[in-house]
Amino acid sequence: MAKNVVYLVVLLILVVIDASLLADTRPKQDVTLFVLNTKALNTFSSAFITVAGTVAVCLGLGYLCRRFLSRRLAYAALLAFLAFSAYVALQVFVYFTYAEREEMLTGSFVSGATLLGVIMMIVFGKEAFAVAQQRDPKPSTKHL
Image 1 (cartoon, rainbow, N blue to C red):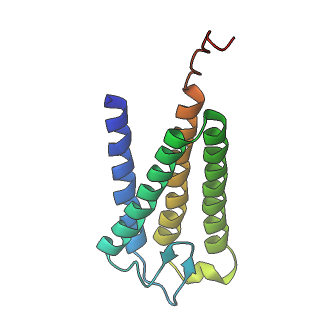
Image 2: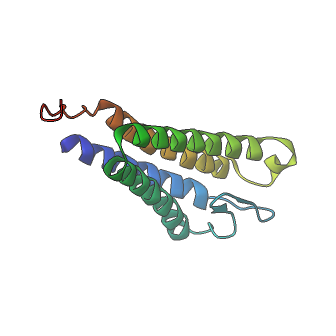
């Protein structure tokens, strides 16, 4: 139980840091990528709601996979979510660091946008690790 509380506190700290990075941007034009829209993220509160909502959805998906799917199917789904979040982090980093988009945004927005993908990877990676560590129930001798 204490490990779970520490994990959630670390996630909350990462969400606050990410929201502060995303809110600290002065774009020259509107940029939208996945759930990130620079015009909608001007204030800390809107950035915090966006990041916290995204992390809450990821935590909910992880819980639902662990709770309602078989062990193998849950592990496969969580690994797919982990791969998707790695794709999101890489896509955001590549999208914002190359070409002429570099001048549009501050470095803090790029860092915050990449950090959101990394937070998603942490959530799905932890959930996949928890599923991998589960023991299979002992087979019943009645059916043998």
